[in-house]
Length: 309
Image (cartoon, rainbow, N blue to C red; front, side, top):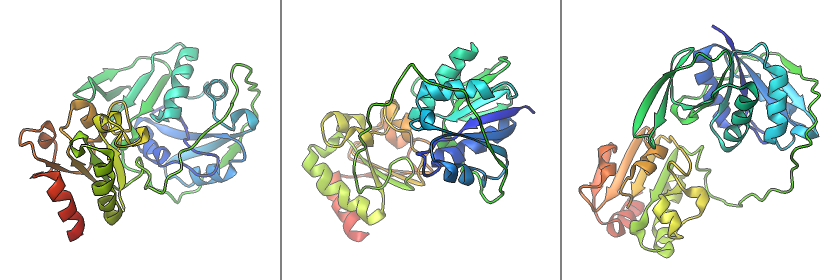
């Protein structure tokens, strides 16, 4: 099998879990090297070198890569692409920003958000908001692929492979980093959470959403999610939205409360290992995807559940 280059997801300090999951997928296609592009990020490269199955880690450091701008990192990948048959990245905000540019510069069609590898040239990906799966075969000499990492288990660590420094001639004159504003929250991170409790429009107000959902999440050490309807109604911030136009999650336990289960929402959470639905509507679509269903008024069920926990 051919060799692939996987772009690591990180914040210059720590390796993101998405990378560990994407390695599991990439190794099913062929041998894998990891590219860590950033600034003062040697610790990230060291962590990447501990992922089992990886051949080596390429470390590119410099101010031009500090914020992993698409223009800079795409040009770097092109410098390194020659020996690789596949260029891979997790389908995160960053990966979905960088890899389409790489594909365009290589003049190939990108293969987006794969959830299964059939062979080194054949893949499964969701279409129609996750309502159907498409099998596709690519004949491209270089395949550019983003991975729906929530569909794959985390790779094991503990091997220790070489880290090679990359001397790059990349000098980005097309874009510049201006500023970054990160939301401050003491809540559990949604994407990496093992347990998620999500609320829908049935809560009726932001006050009830917070009053009922937050104590339950605290008891379970869970992240809080929301349907698009709840976010649009102002019950919860945008960064808590789960679904096709929000975040894709795959926790061990997903509790959907007052969420009907439109296909756009299911696209973001149906890979969860166990799904629990609490809804007063016996015919809610989410019940078809749930492992456990409680037909109940959420205003009675949630306080009782929280109290029993």
